[in-house]
Image (tube, rainbow, N blue to C red; front, side, top):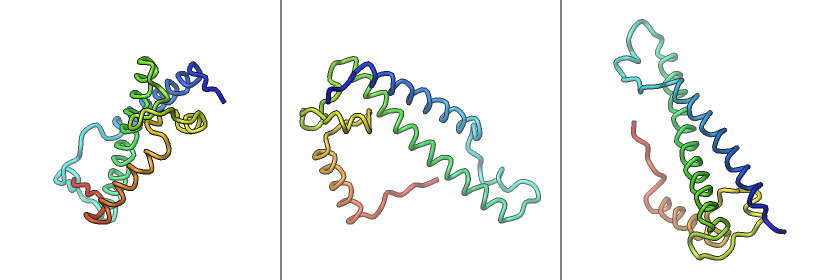
Length: 134
């Protein structure tokens, strides 16, 4: 299976546009973080405040994930321009076309990706999952 680089570029550009639209919509929904004082202004039910807080946390989590994916997509587009698209960033070997069909922004081949995931898994076993502080 030969990889069609023009098709991959179109797919990446479409994903980039989709992510940018989604990020813009999430950013518009909550343009500035709400302080705890502002969140508690006025007569509000504690359940409403808790629900609003959870919804904002979920949206922020989605936003962070989408921003990370956008970075991966932009990096893949840059590798297309540089002529290094499809090569593993870790070992330099070609990434299988089937993997790039599924994840056009893939940075590593399967073996190197598994190594990276094992490192993160081992860190979580020792230190626990990453903490988010708001």
